[in-house]
Length: 483
Image (tube, rainbow, N blue to C red; front, side):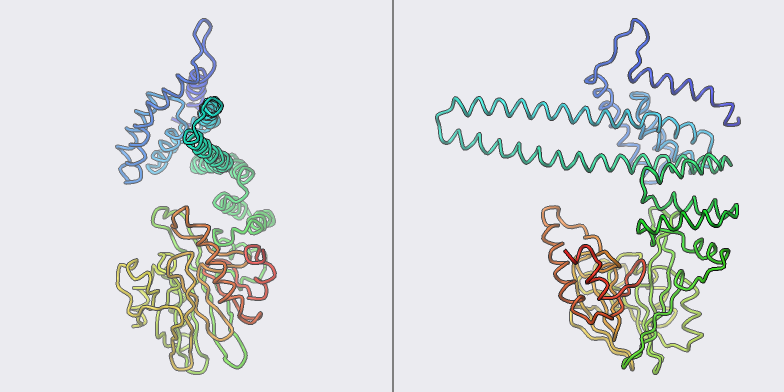
């Protein structure tokens, strides 16, 4: 059945759901917020079971659990969203559309329910605070007074954390709604309703200006209909948001070719360093597909570093297989002596085995992350180690933070910083205990300033993602390091 024939049914369903939420029929009693929250709570076990089954890839069981959730609470926007995903995976796009429109119809109501639940907690805290004040006024005991004071302090901490959580939650809901709108755009695109899909992608980036996937789809649609200037405008907006590593670089290269612009620096770049210690450097932007989201591409930088004299080379951070690397090595007569990893994350080490076998080269990796590798590295590296192959020499600088053993490799006038230092940014902290994150961040920033920013200003910084920079530029422009 075509989607336009289903629309009357859809409107009826939406109206029925809206009536459940807040528009009772004449003579019916309006449901209280307490009763609504109770119904929502009764549905959450089914929803949680559906999530677990969905994450395990058991979509039949997940769908049954989400349907059970919706029988108890038809307004459950998140259950509608996951049912839409299950239909989308099965390429049942018409029912996916119905579920996504229901999810968005109920999204703001779900958000409001969360806010009302928080209001109840605030009232409970205020009531407890009032009781404590009465107890403090009537209690002559110093011990009781200290106990009351401690409870008041705990309430203060809880209130402070709740205020921070509220700000974070507002941001989270904004990003989540943007993603729902984006996904609805994907469903519409599959139904060949391209203009509607385009409008949804535009709405997604209005809600979340950093929604890289929505930008990618806007650029792709404009490219396909040969609206190259409009595609370039969306690309520029995305890059202004710092989304370089999440943009579809193959598409960017095709767009630049269509515009007659040079493509150097998009998927490859010659970064060779002149001077007393000449170095050949070639950057390759590799498309890495995350295991949990194989439909997406994350671009990482892999580097071939070589001596123009001896032709000895190392391959740094090969996160994915790419035929251009093998071709470059062959065309330039290089001998790859080792595969080096700045850290163990799959997007920087995923093709270790492939290239180690291809070039008959050992894998060198951080000593403090040896257990993170499925196959044991051939050599473990620590701070201060030196690596030498003929005319090629590198020094190892360890800067914990992004991961426990994160390394940088200094060679002549270039430093390969992995996910430690980027242009105008630093790497995200790893899975640190929340109570230790502040201290870990301070240590990471101190190590970057000490070990990297102390290098000559013209030292080339080759990061694991995004564009290259220089030590001098980061001293001046990096907001995290200049404070």
